[in-house]
Length: 212
Image 1 (cartoon, rainbow, N blue to C red):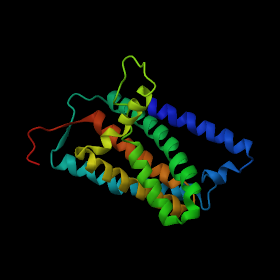
Image 2: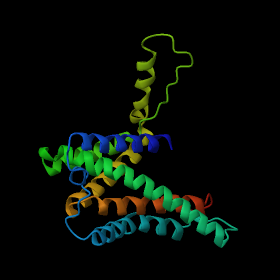
Image 3: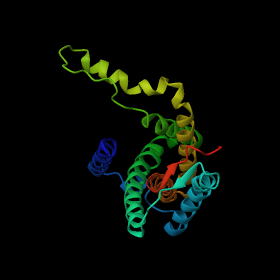
Image 4: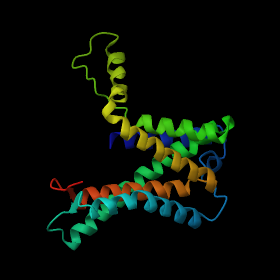
């Protein structure tokens, strides 16, 4: 929640900056569609379902995850609404920033470099956490010490698979943004992924007796 709030704050600040320097914000954030928005959204949704949706189905078929017992219709509806809100919030904020503002800033380097660099930064940002806490800061270097711990998770080999997955996700989202000429497809794909993840977490549990 804190991270998303900071992203939203940064996004609002960016919009204000674009207005002050008189830049067309629709173009700067890749919000001006070059083709029908509905088509881009459908393509993004299809990519999201074809990738992560297949993974969820496989996990259920192999009994790696199983449905929670006692879920009522109201519980399903509530889980879906909460997941959808989270999905839209995360997708819009992150795609406007990464695939919109940052990608457009780096495109003078070439689409390939922009695609890779944005995907890399997207993956790295997900591992930035203030893990080092200074209980009673009383030295000038305490702040720098705390900040140095923000990237500690990057050095943990246990996070390598998650980093690679996020980097690949960034490549897919970046590809959609460049292919569609706007971020609507990337937003739809990202929202579909988050929706599937949140809904799966809320309606299923890990099956400890699974053979897989």
